[in-house]
Image (cartoon, rainbow, N blue to C red; front, top):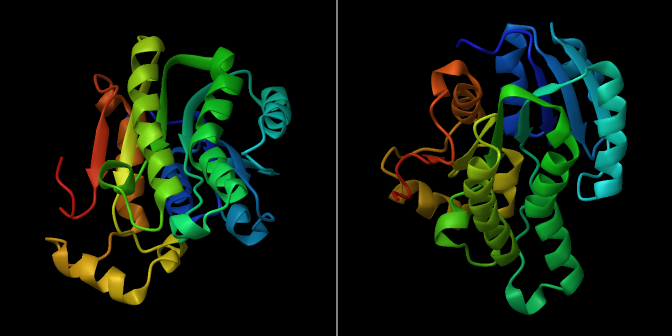
Length: 241
């Protein structure tokens, strides 16, 4: 893909399944990575990369924490080309058991963190930059016992549409909505429900993280230079909008 070489990429949820696939794909273009996640650094994985990678163990649900990372990142690179928010919190909790604290935490991680991240790096986005937000099939059709997650992911879609207008023409903003992807996040779904959804998916299988990564990379590339404000479903035909 064109337009990816030697770019500076800010990516959250960096050690999750989809994010790792994105990192491995973009690594071929010798980019500069600013990586964030709440877990400890995976030195073996990051050490295997050809690109320059700077890892920050941080809580992206905190605007103060993101501000600290932004300040440190700008000491390394004067501008940012791509922002990819791949962090997510998927918890199976029925509404009757969903506490206010759990609701707020899921909204913070799955929606507010997008705002914190974009707001913090906004003055430093380069010309022809791109933002890719990650929503979910749940953000379009809802999900039983995942209400806070679905609400947040629906908000991500609206955030994308609004910012695509506001940040144009300098920055393009798009969303990718994965369906059932073979990552640890799927562990929050019962085996029976997962199999039912697989059976109703036209392609009859789980998606792979690499298949999401390809779409994210495309949306960052010059091949998507006239695409903004869009949502791309990657769900094997499970949901059609």
